[in-house]
Image (cartoon, rainbow, N blue to C red; front, side, top):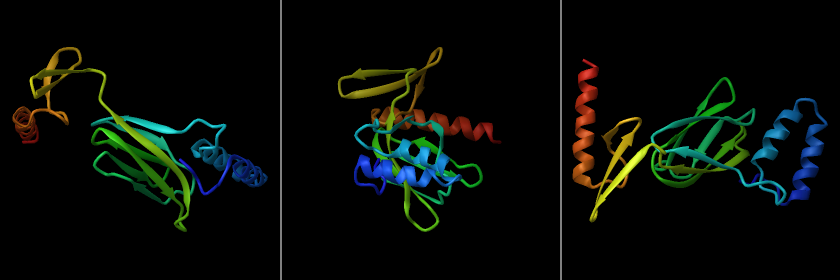
Length: 165
């Protein structure tokens, strides 16, 4: 997550100059949280696959760019400085936030992980997933055996079709 700053010293100098303006204090804190100077921990946003998470973005953010839309999706909410991050597939990607002039205001890595209430049954090369909260029920997850995945997905679609009639 690096902003257009080259090193920690430059980060701090820029932030101090920026914070001298009254409106700059909040944004400077937000930007420092997204920078990756050696004294700051690297920001990694962790999201569970098939779930959404609300995340604050720096004021003035107009555009969000996602590195790999097969891993995560981001949606900018126009009025309150937040975005929705949805985990779509396992793995790592990144997002970049741009202001109205197309300049980067923040960057972050996104790590999409499996949920904690799942059970995976491995039978040779075939894998089946179950969601267990509190009882285990079949679920279609990335990496499942294609025949099992398609069978469960068809049941889910049929159930949803009945619910929307």
